[in-house]
Image (cartoon, rainbow, N blue to C red):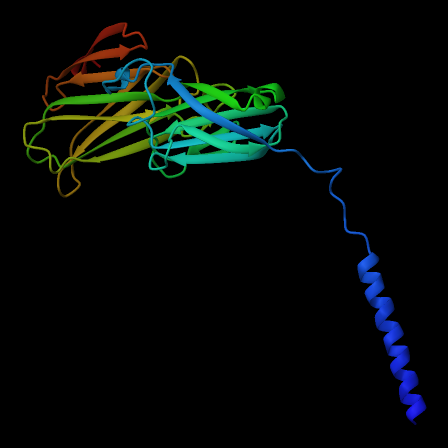
Length: 296
């Protein structure tokens, strides 16, 4: 019996030794041939190419991000595939400069700086993360391997939105809310074309209940335009505290251009109201057009 136990123990020892030998000698998977070398690259915003003053912000033509944008995103694509995305907010140290590690190769690059967070689904589908579109800027182009090997990519941004700006005469005491409904713009941006991806209707609501009686109402709505020369319609509606309509009017054939501010300033609440339409360009050339509510 003792010999049998010793024999079993010996066999067990041989089996365990073979098992351990197999574990120790099994080669590990070698990824050296598939390893991709990462390169530290700094993406930085050097300026806005278009004046911010056209949007009612008192700033120089070549302005910094500070105070003008809250979110910054960089996305790198190979074909239709998004390979990298890097994000930053204005509370981050060094806002406007993003350092990241990427594999040096050729990419299509898009950078978005905005006041509301934007989602980059693809190069042709960029939209607000929420329901509101605000002032936004972008860059789109090809980033070569040589660009990345330098370790620094400096980017100038162009405004990607158009804005309808609305200012009225004295607000009646009963008016507590105003909406702007814009039809013919878009909430989706195509970075490749630099235009809106589709036509839609957008609505912005403004709570003006705290605005002093007889004060002027001044607000605006941003949009992406599906063409370089677009005509949209904008319906302005004022409501009282019970959400009953006090005054409503639809402005038709409103001329808008990407990166331009179309400014409507007039006597909205007067029965015989007339309007002056001013379209501000990048270099502040203006077109003044009379717009009489009674003549349309």
